[in-house]
Amino acid sequence: MRAGRRGQALLVSASTTLWAPLLLLAVGCVHPEDRTVSTGAASAGQEIAPLPATFAGDLPCADCSGQRLTLTLQPGGIFLLRQTYVGVAAGRDEQVYELGRWVIAEDRSRLVLQSGPEAPRQFAIKDSGRLSLLGNDGQEIQSQLNYDLTRLDRVDPIDGTIRLRGMFSYMADAASFTECRTGRRFPVAQERDYLALERAYLGARQNPGEPLLVTLDGRLTPRPVGEGEALKDATVVERFDRVWPGETCARQAFSTASLTNTYWRPVEIAGKPLTVVADQREPHLMLMPAENKLRGFAGCNQFQGRYEVKENTARFTGLATTRKYCEGAMDQEQEFLHALEATASHKIVGEAMDLYDANSKLIARFESRYLK
Image (cartoon, rainbow, N blue to C red; front, side):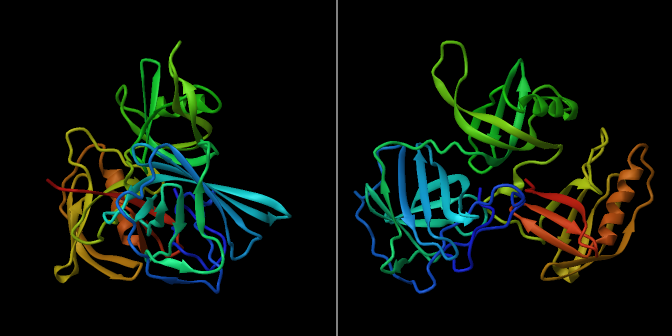
């Protein structure tokens, strides 16, 4: 889960996501004089087995003494990465972490690391014991400096604290966490800040065992999952953040939703989770490119209008609704419509969209939904 990086001369693009206040997951910093050249294809036999495996190397850094990249590849296409910057804070090292999925490119020559909708990080597979960091265009760097990672004799578990986002559920004294980036399901250790997570979940869920989106700072580290059982990777909650009722992993999707021709369902309005009244359809918004028209359902009434979008700015105008009355739904409907009328800009992250007013205050959060 990549969230930021050091330096301006960088190889691979990374997003400044909602993880930015915590751990900033950085990509490789490139020396300003380096340039890239086309990489040749490796033979089909040059792969990274056996797994798990850890590769590490000391790479150049644009604004620090150097950086050490440690990459652990797990079976099933999961990777963990630790990036150590040397002497960046009053002479102290700084460590940042990343979690995501890896694949081998079709031509068998490249390892591709993906941890969000931004451009993936790529490595040339030199042989089973050596990887070489590539540019964001998949080309090798022509340089006298080192961009290679070599296989270590021992696997590094890389269990540092990471900002995690995923679906949490609890039933019959068993808790599980399905991490958004990887889709991998972990048991949750009942230690550290776990009780805060459990209490918040029980207060927010509507049905027993219902999965709810949560964010937390945690580690993925081996723990016994039952008496007499072997160790298994589990989520350890170092600091619980919050529950996000009604939301899913849409913000961590590798794809990016289109603003138009997309069914957008609100999940939070004016800082409050959206609730759907029993026996009512869920509110939604759709922007139709033909004549810049919009339509939707506000919770009780249908509405329509027009929209204007230029880059990240957005305005919804001429909203008109039907005139039904629905017990228990009208206050939320008015907040939804007021948020649309107050919108001045928007931002799409993965399969989610945020709306902001003229003061850049977040006023509504949406997720895309695919219609069958």
